[in-house]
Image (tube, rainbow, N blue to C red; front, side):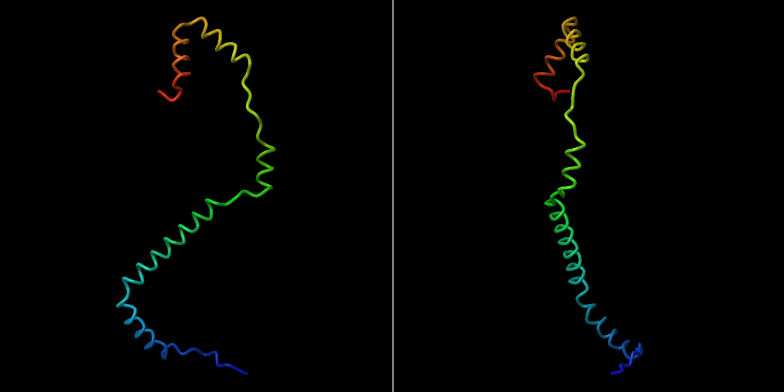
Length: 103
């Protein structure tokens, strides 16, 4: 079977004009529908990405690179001596212990 692959644009032009006139009456509805579809697609993507679980490879890589933070013992001793020697620092540190989020 051999098909004719020639496409006649002149024969399609009147049909396109007729279709354009029909769609012009519904232009606002089509625009609102397109915006709503885009909005639903974006919400679906956000939901999909928010509930995505990390791969086992990513979890193992994260666990192997993370380490337990440590505090220098010399720094602790310096802060304790400073607190003991200065009453203003003692009051400041005591206030920070009671309410650490106050500025």
